[in-house]
Amino acid sequence: MPGKWIIQTIIQKYKYRLLLTYSLFGIEMLGLLLRPYFLGEAVNGLIKGSYNGLLFLAAAHLLWVVTGTIRHRYDSRTYSDIYTGLVVKLVSRNKNKHLSKLSAHSTLSREFIDFLEFDLNYIIEAAYNIIGSLILLFFYDVQVVLVCLLMLIPVTIISYFYGKRMRRLNKLKNDELEQQISVLASKNPLRINEHYSQLRKWQIKISDQEAWNFGVMELLVMVIMTVSLLIVSNTGSGAAQTEAGDLIGIYTYILKFVNGLDTVPYMIQRAATLKDILHRIELEPEDQQDGEPVAVTAA
Image 1: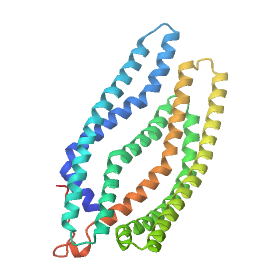
Image 2 (image 1 turned 90 degrees about the vertical axis):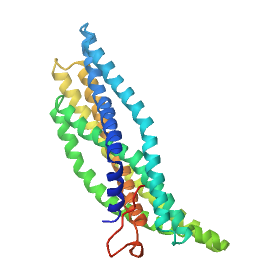
Image 3 (image 1 turned 135 degrees about the vertical axis):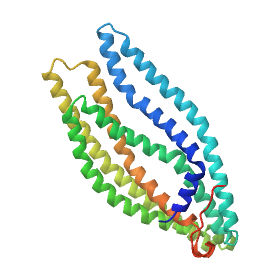
Image 4 (image 1 turned 30 degrees about the vertical axis):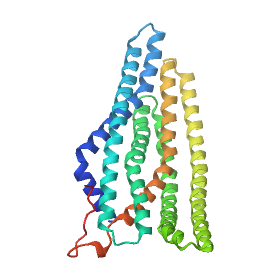
């Protein structure tokens, strides 16, 4: 599998630091996920003259703030160390390659570390929003959960074909990017113009795919919101026991679920980019020893 050696060596060397930062992020997301529930309970409690729900809401918010503050400080130190080690080793093992490829690979390595630091957290947050919201909505209204689950079918189909297109377009764009230093060194205006025109073409095609997919996903989101709110309003009108705080919780978790779905196209686009990056910065056959792949170590 392209890039597996890079991932394995990074995880092996930095496993405890990565485990800590992702654990902190998980706790941070848990506090964020539970906040709407405690908000609803706080509203219900205040209507009845109780402050217990308000205390739980404050505790959940405090957990989110404290954990998030610690994680942000720790993240920058961890990922800057990983990037420095990766680039130094990558360049030293591939010093005989053309400068154009070394420059491009250095830039792609930065993108890979950015994926670990930012995009992976974004994916984890989307998973919390989708799975966590479904679990909590189950305790409010099962019909809303069924609507959300049914909507995952077209989302999955659309995402599959979108992912195939994005992998192809990212490969073509990065093929052109690897030639950049050589093109600039040639000082040929026609060649330089052609190079940047090609980069522009592939970037526009990528952007167009993102725009079309965004439009389709938002139409599906509109369907989820409309049907779910109709179910909630009808249930609320016929059930006197439905409290104001419960309606706040249901509405908020529906929003979280659709926000998670909004993240799916971005997740697919970044996954396609990551796959191509790992393929490019993996050591090539001439850099391997004794016929076995040599890992790009992080230190």
